[in-house]
Length: 220
Image (cartoon, rainbow, N blue to C red; front, side):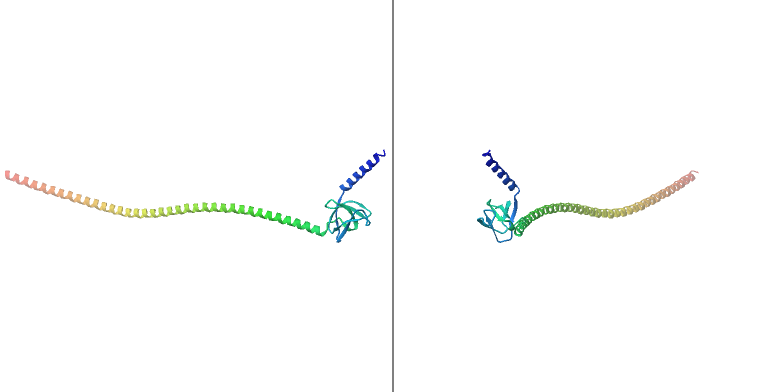
């Protein structure tokens, strides 16, 4: 039993220390120029070093108005509780804000570059679409221009055909009038020829009759 007691005490100390470490809190040296970092919880303990303002501390435990703390290097010691604050100092807040601001600026720059790339891609696509639309309009314009030229040629040809048709119609009318005149003239000629033939027949008939009459008188 006597041998187990030291072991039990050591186990309890280990468990207690572990529990305290699990609940460790981050603190900072307040706005004083220098804070003594001692071996034990009191001003009578030797000074290990002097801590500057805003030095981050990990609080392990508290005793007699002193805090047992651990430095970022892992070194442990005691400091006066009255010169330790839990709120981050202004300098640390400012540095943190500066870092956050730098990170935001970097993010904004990255997003701006991406936005510019997206905008450029969009503009390229719109430009390509405009070029294609322009080409299509040019093709339509060329087709319309060709169709208009064909219509103009057709109108000119139609006008020429109308003029030629009018001229041919005039000539045809003249030809018909000439034919009608010739027809009438021919009819007159044939009529006169018939009259002449009839007159000749009548004259010949008279002559023959006269001759027959003369012959009969001689025989008597």
